[in-house]
Image (cartoon, rainbow, N blue to C red; front, side, top):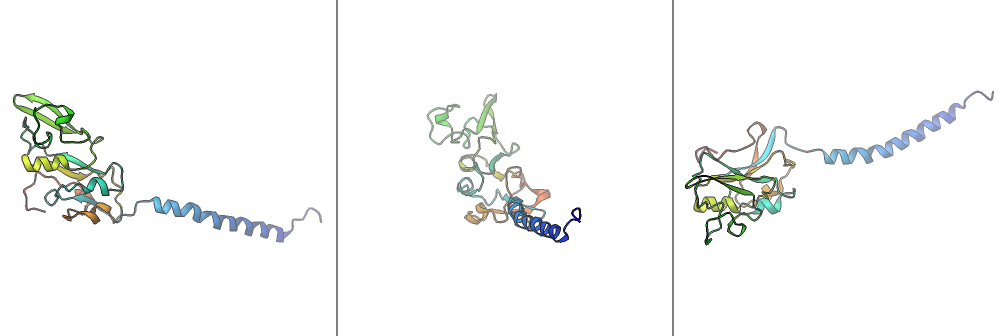
Length: 191
């Protein structure tokens, strides 16, 4: 009889192990569920460049640091001007690449000489923090070829976007994921 296993002892072990699993499972499952993106299926957040007022709230209200909002350049609209309103601060003494002359506080706009009097402007997304100063300067003193968009590879696609909640122009809305960027090259009035 010594070799026989007590059936009640094995049930007690089973209940004890099952209880541990029931206690540990929520501790693992809940953080995983919270970490998973909660999105409206097939839609992403995006900025309508025709509604955007370049208020600067994209930089400060995004849950990402730096913001998932980045400046985009519509090259087909750009005049490649020497005196670029999106690159140079208003009232500068010299038209040069000196940091004191640049409008962008992070130096995210790179200016490259093409030929007299043309310059090419590119955006370094790693430096861009989505402040919108260059976009406002380009709109006020240029042709509006710089505009803001939410970089979908950086965006968490939160169920309720904090930038959309605070946007005074209501320029941020859900768009179909297959058309996740709103190009500025299109004609105005076609939203």
